[in-house]
Each structure stands twice: as C-alpha cells, then as structure tokens.
Length: 167
Image (tube, rainbow, N blue to C red; front, side, top):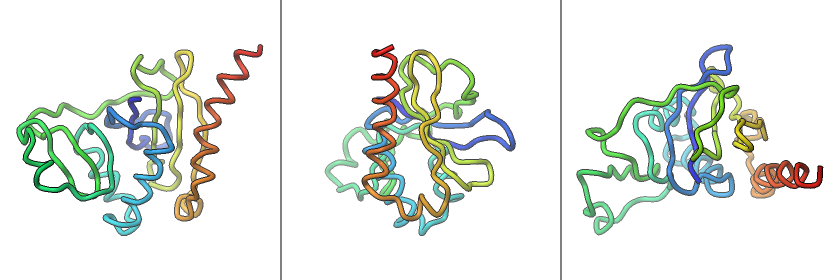
C-alpha cells in the first residue's frame, strides 16, 4: 500500500510529500514514524520532515541496517539508519505536490501530512477516488501515541468502507 509523507503548505490544503511504496498503512507507518521521531530525531519534527522530504522511500523502518543488507544494489537504494530504505539521490525525482481535494493517484492509499508549522499530524486515506481525513494527531497526542489509537485510525477506513457497503 503506497503512502505519502510530507507537509502542508501554509494555510492551505496543498502539500509537498514523498511516496512510500511499502507498508503504508497506519499500523506500520504511524508506529515507525513515532519511533523515528522519538529516537533518531530526538522529538525534532522539523528535522524528521526534512529528512523524509529528501527522497522517495521504498519503506520506512526505524531500524539500523546491517552491512549484508546495505551492500545489495547500492546504486539504487540508500539505506538510512533509523529511517528506512530510500531511492538513491541520483535516481530520485522531485517531491510530489498536490491538494487533498484532488483525486488521489490510483496507487495511493494513505497520506501522513504535518501542518505547515509542524504542529499536528493529519492522517488521510484514499477511498473511492477521494481523500478522507481520518485523524488529527496534535503534538501531545503524537508524543503519547498508543497502539490502540493506531488501530483506531486504521479501523476508521474499514468503518467508511463498511458504511458504504451497507448503504
């Protein structure tokens, strides 16, 4: 499931984001982002977003990468310890620019977008050709993120899908 990670422009619904090709659902991505933010980035949201916007990502993973992994195809992938496996700078294009009011690309399923001032994190899901806002995680909620909240965010898409099926 492809996801987008990025940041809104000031006072708008326009965003700048990078794709994450694998494991984009909240049960993986929110947990990984939270561990990165708390660990590698020492709760510095601006630095986390800056690093995320630097390249497209194959997967976000808040782990270190052993040498036997990083030696595999070093021209294509850049293994960033504590962040993930990203597309190498030489092969990476520009960040995507879009508006949450637009139709999401067919392969986009999730979006994780910080407010311009890096306050709250907003979670969106693509369903039936439009983005649906599922959650706003203010800094105090983000700082105390619990597994049950992550499950609830992901369940909201299921409720949306189930509600339409029943209608």
